[in-house]
Image (cartoon, rainbow, N blue to C red; front, side):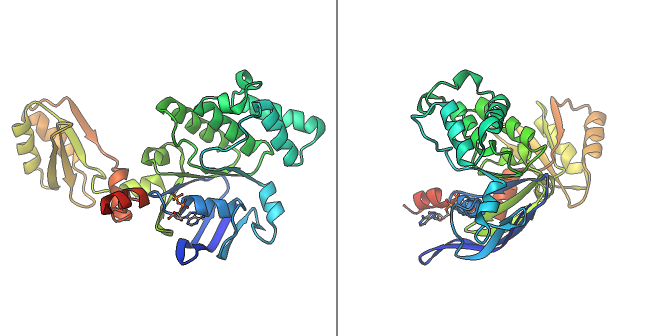
Length: 317
Ligand code: ADP
C-alpha cells in the first residue's frame, strides 16, 4: 500500500531524511516512532505529496507520489501535525469545502460528509467555528477531513499530541476503528501509543531507520523481557529468595515504586521458580508480575540515548 525506496530529504547541507526504505502492507498500522527532529514529519509530508523528495521515491497504492501525484493523493488522507484548518469556518462548512476540493459533488458529497460527521461524532459542533472548538474536537475535525474521500491510506502526524489523557484515549479508539478498512501510518513520540494502536513500529532517529519490528518484538529486546517484579513488606526475605534462583541474572530495587525486579538470564523463565520459592519460604507478596518488556528502555537503547533536537540543545546549553 505504501512503499518508500531510499527516500531522502536534504535542507541545504542538512539531511533530515536519509535513504529511508520501508513497505506498509494492507491493514497494517505502522507506528513511526522517534525523538523530536528525527525526520518523522518530513517523511510523512513526502509520502502525502506535500514535499518533494531530494532523492529516492515513494508510492501509495502503486502511484508514485511525484510522477503520479494526483492519483497518489486521491488514495491518501493526511492529518498534518497540529491538525491545521480554517479557524473561521464552521465544522460543516469546512468539511463541505474539503469534500468539494477532493472533487466530491452533489448527493455523494452530502453522503460522505454525513458519514464522517457520524464516524467522528461531530453532530454537536457542526455550526460552531473551528477556532472555538476544544483541542479534542479540532483533532476530530482534522481526522474527519482526512477521511472524507474514503482513502485507502491514512497518514496521521502526531494525532494525539497536545491532547489530554481522555482525548488521547478517544483518538486512539478512532484510529483503531479506522484500521479495520484502512492502512495507516501514525507518527508519535509517545511509546504507549505504539502498543495501543500499532501492529508494527519503525523507529527512526536523525533521519535513519534504526528498527522495524512489531511492538512485541521490540519488547522482547528489553532486558526486562520475562523479568519478574514484586512488592512485599519482607524485602530482605524476598531478596534472599531471588538470590537463590539459579536463572536470575540480576536484581534491581526501585526506591520510588518499592518494587523488586528480577531479570532472567537470556532465554530463561524465572516466574515459576520464584513464585514457588516465595510460597515455600512463606514470604507474602502484594504483587507478583511477569513483565513483557519496557519500551522506554528499548527505545533509549535503539536511539542510543538520542534526546531529540530540543532536549539535545538544552543539554548542550
Ligand atoms: P520530527 O517530525 O521527527 O520531529 P521533522 O521531520 O519535523 O522531525 O524534522 C527533521 C529535521 O529537519 C529537524 O532537524 C528539523 O529542524 C529539520 N527541518 C524540518 N523542516 C525544515 C525546513 N523547512 N528547513 C530546514 N530544516 C528543516
